Image (cartoon, rainbow, N blue to C red; front, side, top):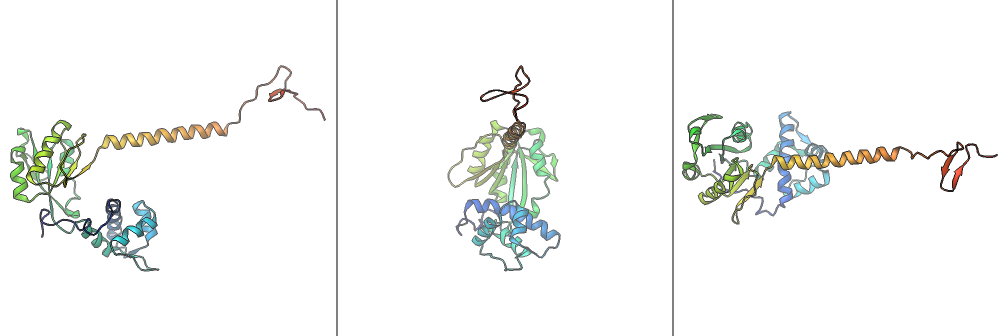
Length: 255
């Protein structure tokens, strides 16, 4: 099986837009769920709903893959799983190193979905000497002094950074210098990398803050709707009528 260092995904050379590439994993996740239920075919509308996109966008995305489905039948689920997996490079073996084996790093190491999606955790690395040799997810933790040798020996091109923010840039620099060209960053900081190195940032606090914004906006909209649904109170006059725009209005209008 090919390693990650010698083979790259075909998406860029085929001119697939980055926005489409970002949606391919969503389609793959939905298709994998259908495959596990032994569903043979799926319509664009059904798959779009499962992936959380509109069907027109899905059909456009699939056109870049050369897959147009069959009218009245839909898309072959197994074929699409293979096709998208191939485009994403998931039919290859991608060795990954995780640097920073604290609570988050250990949780990532224990994630069971790597192997089924084309990734192999080659090594777990931490700067704490007390962690060296301790088993996590069936792998012994290695010290950061071994980082460069581990990357070279395993042909690693993807690194995951789960260190504190203050250590992340130094770790990033060492990964890049050793030959890593793709980084998944969980540290709460922005990394500086040279051209040709791809960084994907995952910041849970930012995602929660965005959700808080939407919650606040929804609460404001609900309050505005409540106010609009309540008719304004018109004050009564001393004679029992109500005050209108043209002055006092009698309580009982003359016939």
